[in-house]
Image 1: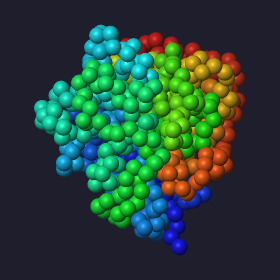
Image 2 (image 1 turned 90 degrees about the vertical axis):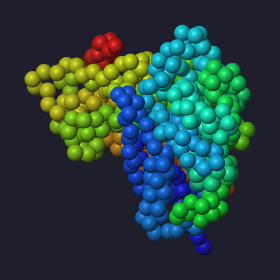
Image 3 (image 1 turned 180 degrees about the vertical axis):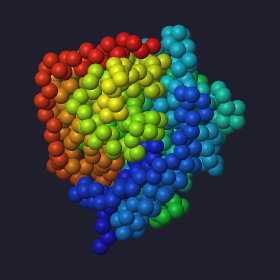
Image 4 (image 1 turned 30 degrees about the horizontal axis):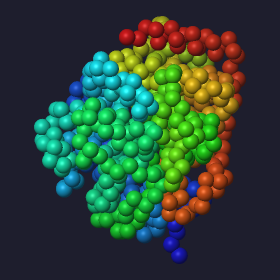
Amino acid sequence: MKANYLLAIDQGTTGTTAALFDEQAGLRAKVNREFRQIFPRPGWVEHDLEDIWKSVLQAVAAVLEQAAVDGGHIAAIGITNQRETTGVWDARSGQPLHNAIVWQCRRTADICAELRRQGHEETFRHKTGLVLDPYFSGTKLHWLLQNDERLARAAAAGQARFGTIDSFLAWRLTAGQAHVTDVSNASRTLLMNLDTLDWDEQLLDILGVPASMLPRIVSSSEVLGRTSGVPGLPDGIPVCGLAGDQQAALFGQACFAPGSVKCTYGTGAFVLMNTGARPVRSSHGLLTTVGWRLGSEVVYALEGSVFIAGAAVQWLRDGLGLIEKSADVGPLAAQVESSEGVVFVPALVGLGAPRWNPQARGLISGLTRGTTAAHLARATLEGIALQVRDVVEAMRRDAGGRLQVLRADGGAAANDLLLQFQADILGVRMDRPRVIETTALGAAMLAGLAAGIWPDLDTLARSWQVERSFTPSMPEQQVAEHIARWEAALEKLA
């Protein structure tokens, strides 16, 4: 009898992870394949959709080899993805019409400013729960339509298809049968109405987006199509889980109860709180978004997005050459007991929640002749945690009540020093699960529900286990000093 493995495709900003999970939600194999980052101009970031597709095929082939199984052992496929990254491809050939514009790209800052000047900010905020920032897909798509004549002609002729990366992968996996996106990804586009959970005609008109380009919005767990013509996979495997990476992580962390919160420490850091069946509108710089939809039941979330987290460690590695690999940052930072007053604000692509300053740039303060690479490494980890603290404080004010525990996941969550400092600076317990690849796990869970592998959320909740907890231990005065230095550094930003 063939095993029922669930294949999760976690398509991220710097690489694609393919993971196989068993019927007990246990991780059996995992492989990551990186791909090119394209920087046409300062502040611009692009991906080649073909590079992404190749990384998916490579990762899937490698994970099957690692697990010593073939594609016939896969019961279902779940997809999770970098969310706001914007792709457009030809409806007939499926070939990209332009490089994808990545969520980090700041090229549409002037478009956002002009939309605000025209008085549209409140309309977008009310209808979408988002802010007018270059982060989101809508202004990226507007830019493409305004600046690429070939693409604009294809769109006018009804031959161009838009999608976030989940849509592109669903299209490729099903040989064009499925042009879909789930509600969690659609809620990140500036084009979907949070109340109707459908594309909004007024917003499409403001941004000049033809409705013919858009995918069909579906739930996060249903059979969307079946594999067809995919190298290395048999035809007929159901593709039945879709969710943006942060919503998938919230699901994978079993944050099924309203008020439960997780933080994913990846390229960026993303804090999400389950707010239940009704959207909570933020008045403190957070985003209101869709968590997931299962059948007719919708779960909403509050989100705070920190643009640079693990990417700051990559900068220490690639930009400054202070470490050989990202995992070295913890041991280097541990060589000193404190950062000795050094503060690093990693606003390398602007600031996200709760300040939303696209013009901000990174800042290091408090340097002395005694500052070493170890102090800077420690300040980098502290800067990540202090950004998360700002988001959590805004979340407390929006949602009310005191946070008791924060569930951590993502690659950087393996860093004990980071999670201990995070617990100290927040004054709350940090729980790290046994499976920190909760983004992939969430996609597998959503696919498994649709495929009948698991009957309900209670079964999934019982599979979640803590690997280690971190409790606050820093004296209050020391916490206050860290926060004061941080806030003083923020005041110096443009």
